[in-house]
Length: 241
Image 1 (cartoon, one colour):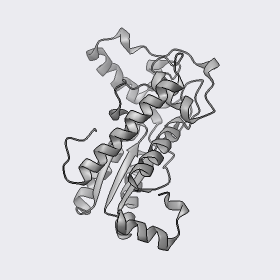
Image 2 (cartoon, rainbow, N blue to C red):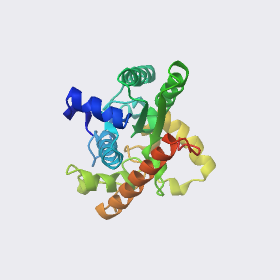
Image 3 (tube, rainbow, N blue to C red):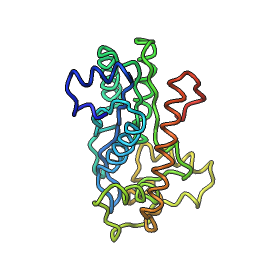
């Protein structure tokens, strides 16, 4: 159910039957020379829509801007951690007033994770009867995630016409480093992504293809549907966070 398309009587009726809402959260930031700055928001919007279709959960509009300051001086349209946390908290409290009992926050950008988890913890204290599940979609795939690399580019080749493969270039190659080295590099990238990747790409997008993108999306969507339904019925295992 797409919330913005429904009338008040319709949405009230649907909430009574299925009082769960999906909040997609993306970002606006550079994604190398070949992908649009809306990539994270585009991907999470697509995934959220498919999850909503399979579950009947109420789909809210995507929050387009996230915490992406680490991409400076390349383009990013960012909000502070506290602003995103407060916004999510306020949205969930408003949902609770409208008799929604649970929110699934689908995250499309790594830099958002702390703000979303902090909002979840705050809501657990202030509104204990309201369930909040925070899922970052890359935790539901077998592939090792990247940024504007093979995974994101393959997904975007399925859902977008704005991929310019002729401009795709190889970026930071994590295969050249040990896990211990990558842990240190990751901390640097979280503060200055460009200082590590140079061109804004983590991975190699040059062989990205729609066939693989469809496989990744199918795995992610089906896994999120299964995990959310498991958690909401009280049979939760450790969440993918």
